[in-house]
Image 1 (cartoon, rainbow, N blue to C red):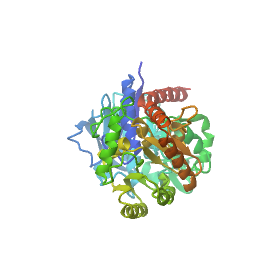
Image 2 (image 1 turned 90 degrees about the horizontal axis):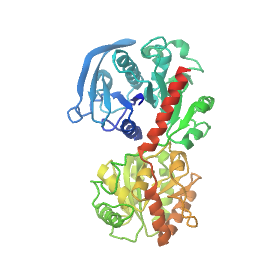
Image 3 (image 1 turned 120 degrees about the vertical axis):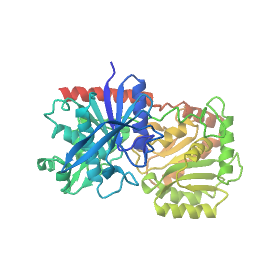
Image 4 (image 1 turned 120 degrees about the horizontal axis):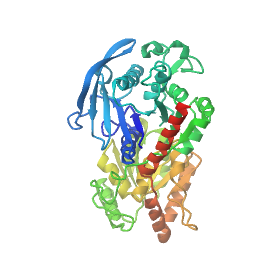
Length: 481
């Protein structure tokens, strides 16, 4: 018999997205439903969501949520995710904004979201066995369940799994947040929500959830160290027995070179002619010379130091002395906008740069490049390397987090491996990995085997979804013991 699961997240594809969390929160429920589980989703109803296109329908009567001040909340429901009901929490005061995050009252907004979801469940005929909360925006859900609702017969049986997607974003607010969130001051201790004088939503999730997970096994180990722990390594180390790593998947229906409607030509592992055609089309689109023999390095990324743009910037002047081309798409820190713009102007025959987001171009870079660059300082999971593997574009990554779990160095002697990696976060180490990649590309049989290995890698959601099912059952068992 299937489990009843409520996945709660601040952003979910196809409704709203700023990053990888939305991809996971949209794809995982779909995969769980395909396995026969009754999975539903809860998220805020932002003003940017196209209610008509996504067929949002009002559900039930509005109700009041008490958090220092009473707020009237409505629920909308959508079937936009196949096989999954999505409940959208509507409070214009909190979510009728131009952007999803970044406002001074973010703490109030997501405390309201967490409390409203639980109040909705109290009134609903459907009750989940487990709530799967994600990142700091839902960190108070486990707190509320084990404090405000611990004696509530309708909610107290619900277990919780709390997933960390990026530990760097924790949701820390002043101590006055306790009153506004309706949290008892007794929880404002070093063993509770207090964190360097502030209320830390993520710490609440880490302490109060029945079980914890993050988005790769390597990252689950890394965040228990001072280097990656963002000052929460002590909390995580204490709960190490309850912390698990599950690598995200990607939607193999959306990311499929054999049927991708955004590509000029389709291809598969047994017939790569279309990949060469995509390379030529990408070069043309970006104004680069039509050079089938010139290695193309692709990058689709947030342009930030965390993503390794610092060491890539150091390497670029040396790489551009070689017979190579770059296809770069992204937006982020202005420093890198200016730096890459100058590089593109100086080398128009070698660098194609688009500052912004273009979904079609992203697909075309994944399909038309020879190599895909992800030199991240840290990477909890990463999706780009999995997409590039699917498209036969060899990833070059730093050995960290999910990149370490999904990309293994190619060995021409054993013919094993699906990409190239480097450990030290330095320009020298990155250049070394790129040099090894270029040497392999010049060796035809080895290169063909490497591309085949890349495309044979399986990072579809089916395997990851089953791992989450096991964690849900473990959380239910833990909660009931």
